[in-house]
Amino acid sequence: MLKILLALDLSPHSLRAAEYVARVAPHLDGCQVTALVVSSGIPYSAQQVPPPQAEETEPELHGDEDHLQEMREVRSLLDEVRSLLLKSGLPEERLQTRIKPLGRGIALDILDEARNHDCDTIVVGRRGLSKVKSLLLGSISSTIVQNAEGLTVWVVE
View 1: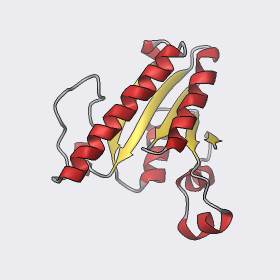
View 2 (view 1 turned 180 degrees about the horizontal axis):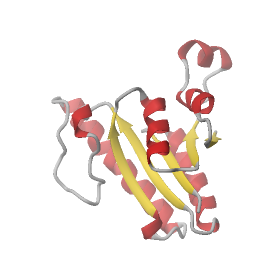
View 3 (view 1 turned 120 degrees about the horizontal axis):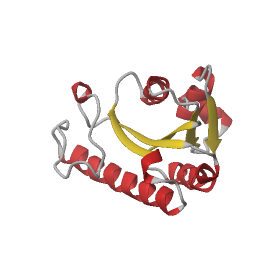
View 4 (view 1 turned 135 degrees about the vertical axis):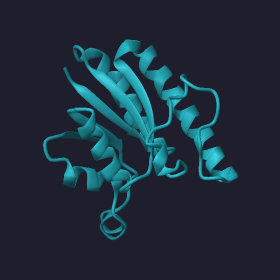
């Protein structure tokens, strides 16, 4: 059984990755999908925030309005992606959503999550940085590809 970790952020690039997974995953026999957002607004001690559908109250956050707004946007994104995947035919029991606090860095946290949950594949969107900018600034998708030993990575543009 294929286990996909769909790494999301608040960019249109991650939505394109979600749309790609929605087209492919329902046709892969027994495929499970976990949609993950790594958020800087959650204290690391929280370990993980309940998914949007599990809890209506706000989790413990680093205390400013920007982080509260980020959490609202993240939950809205996960609701949208969940709806997209379910409408595409992915059974609800094969779909999970997670919000994880930022720990070692977004790319490394994504890799850790994939390994901790025995995922086979990570799907990420690519922001389209030029090669020079990507080299100088780094890139989450590049870091994931470089460190994904034993995992398949789908980078969706």
